[in-house]
Image 1 (cartoon, rainbow, N blue to C red):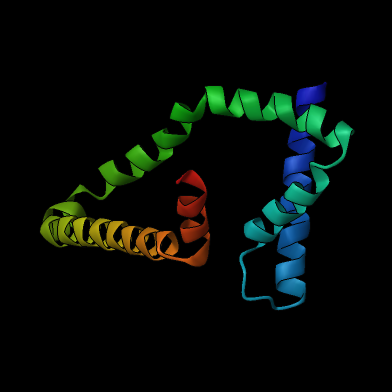
Image 2: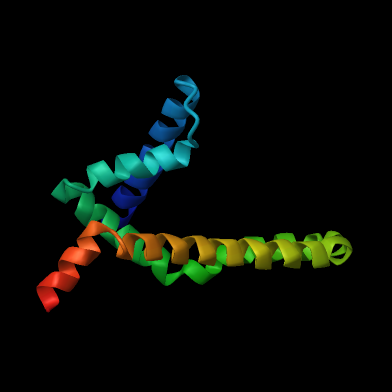
Length: 123
């Protein structure tokens, strides 16, 4: 029963997020707004306990959620064959850009005033 309550919380908050996004013409997708609402709702113990069981169940069966994606790829093999090289280049390039942006941000943060205070304390 708790698992169904948790699923009801997840789906209900996603639906509220979707209604807010469409009703207020917000520039964010409804599920993102629903996740933010879930973050706020997780402060309450009844929500935590019911969502915990559902989350554990979904995470334990996470690999099953990739089956539709695999089927989608299999149905579009000709598209993948025609554009596979371009897709591979875009995937590798975007991964490298993300890694460089993360490394640059970390480097900049480590040079900031907080990093200098930490190094002074360690001496």
